[in-house]
Image (cartoon, rainbow, N blue to C red; front, side, top):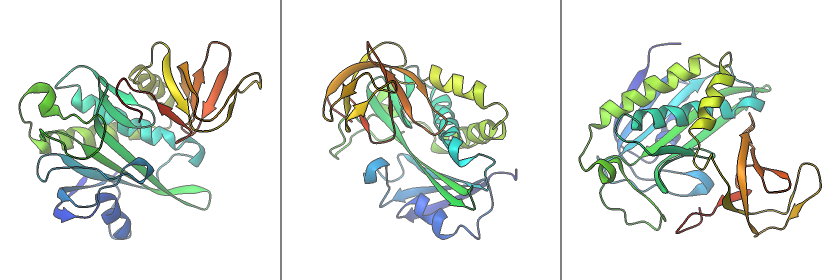
Length: 260
């Protein structure tokens, strides 16, 4: 892999969109950071609130990643672990909420948006967008549970230090794939939010268990524990009697104060 190429922009609508529109001219292992992002995007088409100059809005480009499309979630795991490890230098209580949010206790500190482009049955490139709350103290959007590193530790932290920690950590993990995917996956599971015990979820679909013995109607809140995450990102949840499989957007976590 080439050395990491950093591009710093004063203002842009979205760092993911910037990379997508300049894909042919950018080298592999490019990291784009923005002082101000005017139209940051999150999962499910949500916007991302970020006070200019206070938080990290960055995107990482991988060209022709050596990952099968059926195992694309391995890249997401690597990105989430890189962010969690970088934050772990400053505080405890950091976990990864499936599929790729980063949490401090029950509060969201980071959102990650992974976008893959497929060509000829392979991933032609991947763009990993990261929105991380670092030094912003107050949030004004309708997001239910935001928090920043400054809220947690009580002081500001240089953004460049965390950006480099995330980028170096991500590429270190990525270069170990796919040979060490099993070890990385185990570490990912160890760092999952609500990985131990049974917690409430709401299904957004009519879910039939993998053994066809149990059906949970759409809209139902039920308790279950996380069993595993499949290489394609599917989450496996076990109720008291059966195991259910959910893809992205098919299940919601029921939080103490809100549903996400």
